[in-house]
Length: 311
Length: 267
Image (cartoon, rainbow over all chains, first blue to last red; front, side, top):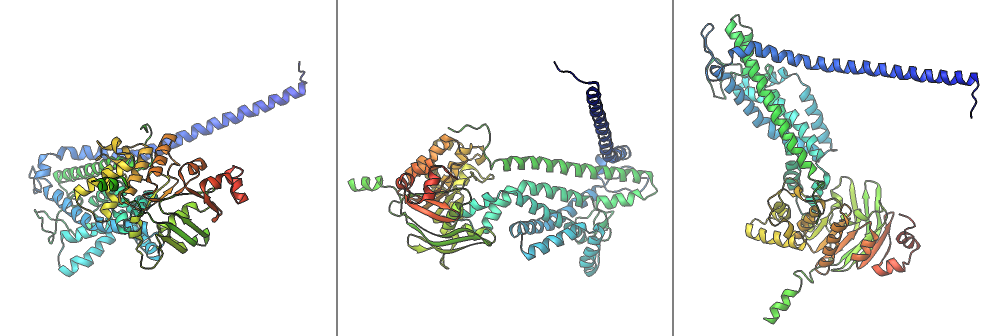
């Protein structure tokens, strides 16, 4: 039998009280932090929800088959659309991808293969600066490069401006994705008698491709929504045009023009245009995610799969 | 008639297998020396095992024999490596062509995940410029058969290589290495990631290939070295301690350090 003196028992009592108090305090801090984190998440999601509801309320009314198939109508005339701007945006993004993807892919592969060289450091630095540049600067550059010498605004100059926007994004993404490919794969290829370039392209780049495609889609989606680089390059056009040497309409430009107009139906069309742009970008992101999932199954393949019997 | 059947029973590349001799080989990563002045003679058509504790330079030594070592940034090799009497570090030797004669299999199975089983095996041949489908099919089937994988995969040649189990993937990598018909095969702990049954298949394969191919196998598993090799070399801290017929090395080693290692007193 143990005998505890009164003094000892108060001491244990006090220690226990301290423990309870500490536990209580920890609990309070914990719930406070949970509330804070939830609030932060809500604040982060709120703008997107607000934007989407606004776009749907403002734009859904003007969204019809006409919007996709008709040309812009004069103010007050019903049934106008943005067919030229939608096609124009596709054309601009197409030109941008044609310029930006090969350059970005090549530069990214170079950065990953020649990580430590001086030139690689330089290219990496330039790519970072380029991706941090305000997009209107790219517009000015394309203006100086193409619009001024040729003497007119053109789809080509707009495509070049957007292409410059894509290049650094694709470059850095390609570098990161290629670095993720296990080096053992490239070594196996070399050990089989692959020349280095062939190992890089056939084995490494192909294995990294889903990740690169994802990044490229995100970059293209970003380019599709850019307005500033197009203001004085593609310029906008109220008529139908597919000529790359002529000014061309683009969704962001059309939205820009319509949103400032005093006419209600034009403003509704601007909302609808914004909604279409949002849908386009969302679609690309979804596509990018699907490709990313395919990628995961690829790199998993390098290590043996669980559950497959060896007999 | 009798002549032909006699010829057929002889392994395809018998007699072609060259000897591999290293002389004064020094391999470095930057300033760190991984292999110090190693000289070793691997007999033609024999299986040479290299054992030793982790980090003793076994793998680096192996990687010098197909000149893969120099593909690592900052890595250098000096000394002499002769395959069949000709110096592979001579200036006129193209490492790409060399690697088509000297196959290599890594510790982890490394099938190319984007390629089908067939394309994996054909990869080396295609890189060497072989394009005719019929010839490719023939060689792929023979390589898979030699690696003991043909019956398991013959109905799924167009499936992705990562549908296979780990052991099958490793045998696929061996088939891929064999497809280009190398005369020297370098195995870098080929069974380290396999279960006992998978290891056994690989060991059987090594046993079958001896004679027609000169094999150097790096292994952590001393029982495995004892089972598959003709001679065994023991390395420690980048130096070759001893190289002797396998039975001798394991029963009456000349060096005390070898004895300590093979009896499990360290490493």
